[in-house]
Length: 495
Ligand SMILES: Cc1cc2nc3c(=O)[nH]c(=O)nc-3n(C[C@H](O)[C@H](O)[C@H](O)COP(=O)(O)OP(=O)(O)OC[C@H]3O[C@@H](n4cnc5c(N)ncnc54)[C@H](O)[C@@H]3O)c2cc1C
Image (cartoon, rainbow, N blue to C red):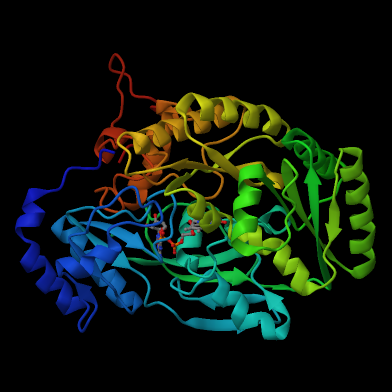
């Protein structure tokens, strides 16, 4: 993995830089001792590690702005970090960069039940938002499996999803506004409390921008009233093809479940051994389907889904009898990643999205790749929206296995693109998928995307080495091409 080369001039001034940062963030907000930098050396993609030059933990928006302004003035790179659970290496530090941790921004600033929104600081965990409003019968819908730890700022940066996003949308559909500090230290607002904002939809650019455009310092999210009823079905199938067809038929019937998740045999066995919630062990694929809404609607939809499942060879069907059982059905799926961690020394979690109908063919080819690379794979996925999470099993202590796992993963993502899908569903590009971007985007596409980056951060100081396989200097991208003495669009005024 090639990262931007450390700037030796910056490293030579490390002591002076730390001193200046301590003046901006006094107290314990600057960490520079080597053993204290260790916890920050990687995020959820632990295959890559690099201690940062220094960690800064600001507490106020003014401190964030001052740190960024100082770093811009001194040509110092900055890597924003929330809780460090990214699975794509988005928060991977650089040797010559400031790691800007947003963990001290932990306040819920406002809850407005009438307008159904909450204004929170970016370090608040995803689950803490629901915890803060559940007493009044509300919740925050996007629910990444990491919700107990991941921050809402990280969710905004990655446009994170979860099992309930099929019906309720991803982070982008549940964020009304953000406050963002640019590399220049300018404090900007995008969107707000109203459902529509004037002008261009720049909020849509910020959500999913992976810490490349600015640092999010406040987030306004929608909160929703909890549905009257929610029931989950566990449905076992003799093949992944049959389960995949059941998913396609359910959506084609006009039913949008609150969640629709699939696990294959290795994942089912790992999850059951971990949480013991009674998952069937004699099936090839398991669907967990949640239906919610008014009681009558819910009962009607359960009957419809049952009929569709039976028509697709479903063997066992269990319907949750109470809330405890519904949560138990989900517990295995939500713990699938750590569960797989118990059956393999290491695993590499992929994240690609495909058109739902391509599920059987992609799974068949993935099994062939598994044999070709000699590495096992367990599959859990958001089946309703075609978002796959193959977990490649490997042992980092065996020479060459990490590299083989990475190549296997890259082939899976290329396969997703080949069948009409995309490189990422919800984990972002980060460093993990950076070098695969040309499999999906032309050079022209990538240049256009980078022009956007240049508009926010022309010196390319914010989170460099992520998302773009190669960075052109912004001046190059802005260069005007003059052909035979004729400038393009001569009628436009030049500045
Ligand atoms: C066990 C496990 C399960 C997971 N399950 C899911 C899942 O179901 N769905 C899902 O979508 N993801 C999942 N993830 C991935 C991860 O939790 C999400 O990507 C999450 O949104 C990252 O949040 P974070 O606070 O940990 O961000 P970090 O990992 O700290 O950072 C992620 C990215 O956001 C940027 N960033 C962080 N904070 C800010 C900020 N305030 N301003 C600007 N940029 C910022 C960073 O620079 C980085 O690029 C899972 C991870 C794990 C370990």
